[in-house]
Image: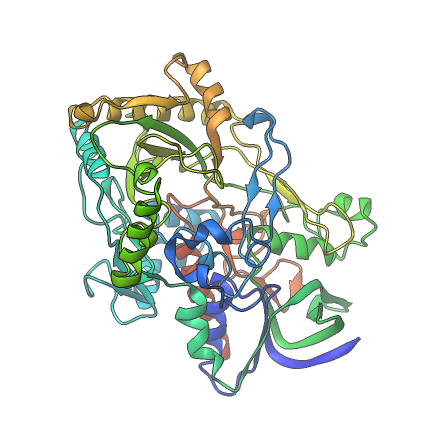
Length: 541
């Protein structure tokens, strides 16, 4: 086994968190960093064209190609579970939506960890520091940072009508989802630059790549962490990995930072002997640290995709149905970087309450001027829109567990969607609320007709059943290495994201979230990395 050298910090995973960490840590010229990524460079054309997510998800060039286990809550269906395998990670294949969540999300993290630095008022400046908002700097937004936030370069008549209909039933029109209270309806803002995707590789890694103190190794598969038992306890010494048909070890003089995501990070920990002892023994791995929370607490947003046929308004179904339409769309993008090829997967958003008793919005809508049976299928042959709605605060908890003592064998992903009475009720209420919006006067002239799931689902039990038939992930897995107080047996990391029981090791990605944020999870992950880099810099001082 070859030595890849010794570095102050080794970062495992060049996704959203890893790219930010690499940039921030190498600002000091005397700090040497190794960044290891299993995927390749982000030089695939379809990464950068916004609609190209259609060609990146399910593509081994850019996606880990995970699948869930068959889920009883989804009528026994298994789902594809895309995770980015390329520089930029999931920011290279995601929906580009800039969303922070609600103030209460972060205040809840502060309560769980006993660390007030996670409160909304304290993380808001961190969000702002890396932001370059199209509206400039103000109380809610930052300017001049690497993470560009722009308005979308499109409009659709049917989406404007949905927004008006939502307003008619009490979901107000607003301009900004990111001030701490996202109640209302607006077009999503996106991480793009003039109609081109901005991933974290472009925003953060490219400026850092020219620094001589950063080494980037792509196409390298991490097999396990090198953890030793000493008289003072377990210590992470570095990483064992393969690349180009060769086996390597790299040594971390200060810390190893595991940023492999909510699926990859717990899997690597388990392979390295940090996880539930019974699970590790079952696969012939000697436990170094019995950490029962590793891989548990999986949370995700399940979207319920309601499809409505319409008349009297264009949708992408019809616009893209002919060669003339396709050519027009291509020219719009080639000449102006606008139109359907500049579209994020979802264009219009809304945050609402499933019932009046909810203190804050617990539903998020992603509304699209198109429809299809499932991701990857062709568009329907009739004009339609899709109103996807997800429960922002699911009570169900799943898990990620190794399937074999083999780093190349994918782990078992068990989300346990709709497995609690609370989640089933919220799902039924969400479908009912969507029907109320669609029945509002603003949409009447388009004569919307429910195509999926169908009007024959009426009672609460029937609607919960329908949710299981049409539900699918919106790709927001979090929580599998959650942070918590030191006496919390199921917490994997402390509030500084240091792995409990293993010195020299932190987890820095969406897996550390104790509870899922009330919205899309990419920018909260970026904030987590920014905050951790600040903590590390404070340790230097």
